[in-house]
Image (cartoon, rainbow, N blue to C red; front, side, top):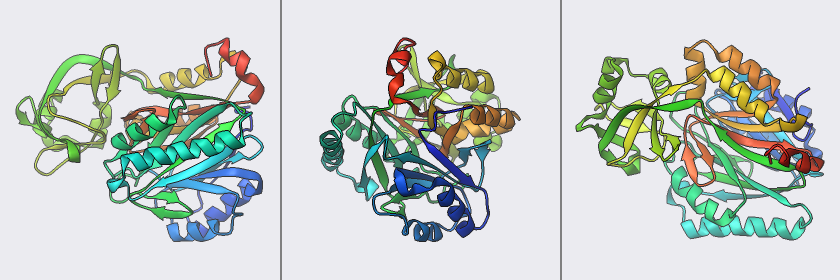
Length: 388
């Protein structure tokens, strides 16, 4: 059996929104929950979800977002409404919103995070563990600045999050703030709990020696204009040995680039090639940056091994995960999506496919990032295995 029953899980693949959200809320039985988190797939009427949420008790806080795919029982899901709930017996939650996100004030964002933490510290002084979960507009281009500001205020408390999606449309993404779906917004949940919580981030990629230099860029738009002094898209295609006309999301998923700093690397994923041949990225990019092509190991085996590593000492956690859409595209392109789904299901993962992930002070891509929740009494056992 997976998980500890710390999180409550529910999902519906019903195509009709009223039926789907009704089934999810019925299964969650949210009256005793501190927080409900919703992941909403393509095709649902967001106004109908808002109407259903309006009937929840005021003490049940809600956050969520639209997705590029969902993760629940059975693994990868599409067009579903998937949800998790955190019970008040084990969690106290403070929510804060950043809107409009594209014009957010750094000092106000820091002050909000400080205030959220201060309120929880006062009310739950005997609960020692604190983490933060962030959902943000995946097309805002503001995640890098936001996580930097929030992480400073959160101090030693881990920050994990994901950027809302819109399937593969890249049109409009929505974040659920105060029971309303909004674009150009982010929502931060600070959680206090007696449970042991581990924040994790991993990927199955290794940098190669194939390098390229960003010789011209528009950082504000996350656009790489030139690589090696040539138009970015055609030059990237040349390095791969491909026709520029063949560049697609599947190409970018299979041929990621990374920025390497010492022994660590960060994936800087490509979103799409623009009509003028420039490359639009999911995360911050700048002129002079040296990029390396990366190659992936077996995504199924790596995922299984990494998730199993979170169960050190025989204690199996409940897992909330943000999984980049490019990882899912790679699995689909290599015909391993069903095997990945089996791994996700076996380890009891709940979450969504993102347009980017946040981990402490970084906005990253093509990673599997999240929070693992363990029972309150498990801290000493986990510490012996280097977990927690």
